[in-house]
Image: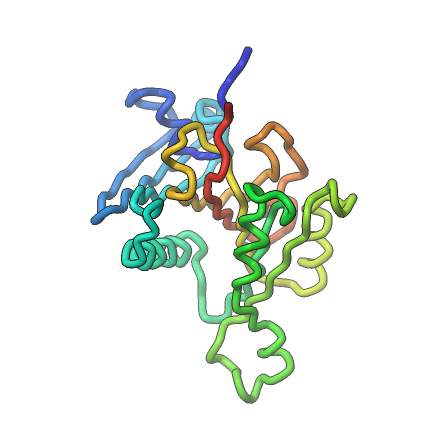
Amino acid sequence: MYSIRTDLAVEARELYKGREIPGVRVDEKHLEGIKVTKVKILNEEGEKAMGKPVGDYITIEAPGLIERDLDLEEEVAKVLADIIKEIANLTENTQVLVVGLGNWNVTPDALGPRVVSNIVVTRHLKEYAPQQFGDEIRSVSAISPGVLGITGIETAEILKGVVDRIKPDLIITIDALASRRLERLSTTIQISNTGISPGSGIGNRRLSITEQSLGIPVIAIGVPTVVDA
């Protein structure tokens, strides 16, 4: 049987057309030009209904982003930062590894590597010049591990080696997602604390990148860049 694939929890919930979903709690908040939807999957019943693991899925929708509204972009960035702080339980000493998932040679899949190329990394500064930087900056490292078709290595396997070596406290993944609605492309951001299965949105499921597989919390951030057709 054909079914539309989506990475967005808010879209999985929309398939129920406003009906109550057992094991799922939904809260919505409206700001100026921004809608924030929190979908919390509470148990196995909710997991089965939604087709997603137990956890928190927070979606930021800002249709005006398509117009390149700089003021709106700034507001969305603030909302995103607040959500990351809340969902990741960040402290001043949390060491973060940012992972840009995807294929940098394919435009719709290049979001992760593009973001990583703009990350200000600081781990080396804290390690090699502690007197100058000390506690003034957080330890941030970043990697774009590529995809299986380029490296021949599962992304989760690469990250397991990196985690074992540099021992971060938290991973934040950035990835391109699949949506079922055109209007959500590049205007929607999903943040979850359940990790990610690269390629799952297009039916190409790989080894999962989760706290269970890597031993540290994984926050997944994604933006839809393709629709199922």
